[in-house]
Image (cartoon, rainbow, N blue to C red; front, side, top):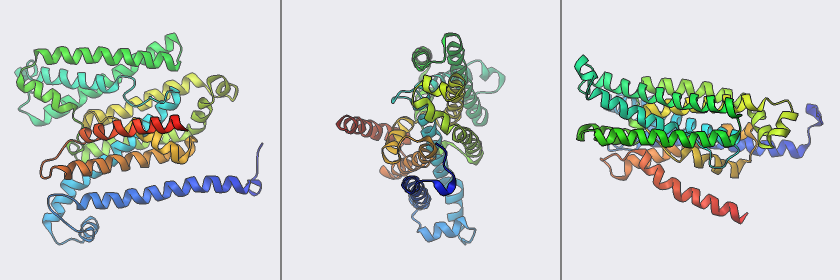
Amino acid sequence: MHFDDGQIPEEYKQYTGRKVAFIGLTLSALVAGLLISVSLGAADMSLLEVIRTMLGMSGSSRFDAIIWNIRLPQALTAIVAGAALAISGTVMQSILRNPLGSPFTLGISNAAAFGAALSVMLQGGALRSLGIGTENAFWSSYLTTGAAFVLSMLAAVVIIMISRTRGATPEVMVLSGIAMGSLFTAGTMFLQFFADDVELASMVYWTFGDTARASWSELGIAAAVTTLVSLYFFTNAWNYNAIDTGDETARSLGVPVNRIRISGMLAASMLTAVIVSFLGIIGFVGLVVPHMVRRVIGADHRFLLPASVIGGGMLLLLSDTAARMLLSPQVVPVSVLTAFLGAPVFIYLIIRGYRH
């Protein structure tokens, strides 16, 4: 039944109003969290000093350097990465119709790790003869990032090809992803077996997701890709709602299920590949955040997707801040903290779910 604006039931307006209010409050909390995160660290500074510096009114070159060169890009990177992983996980759980869906379900992180390991091995051998080796920090960083991204997208393309030949069903996608993940894990272990101590240390270190790796240029690329892909997801929110009711029901409503499923998987994989190739592997954010937000705001993707973006940014920002402060002045990679926190939180959500 179609309602004109003047005929919309008051109960529905209140229902949607509460969701919009929640999103607005969460966004305000995210902004406050950003300011607090930037103010915390080995060099203490007040919130007023942070605001004055960000507005260009600070008279301290020391505060300018700390905020603009270190803390602000790291905090913004945490927000962008968390948002990207969370919205990718939300879409994955919908199109795969699997509560365990996440950006890493389809083996994207395993493929990225193999690409990074392969790059490290090449830089330690063949490329060194060309003058492009581990001693050149610029080439080393971008070769590793590029290799991780290319292998991630290769894994996604292979899964799409399998899905197109066998039918783009959730089962085919999940099983193909598991197979690809196992294959690339085996390849990474093979390279690690033949790596020397320095190469092995580089491979292992790369897998530790760390927001401090990104500069303003990497942050700009990640933010642009996250914005574009998120807008694509927002425009398909109704389609994801329809798919949640079942493929047959969605098709009866005119939704091209296979196309939406493949394009959504490809977009989520590309977004995840960008984040992982720049920062390394940051687990559990894309798995846990959609479930946490869904419990509060419901399963309507018109509200769930933007709420997941904000919730993911908030969770990773808080985790990154805690990781910086936990053993200060030593900085713990944020992926270590999210792994420790993600497992018990997800177990709690499972238990609560069964009780309901």
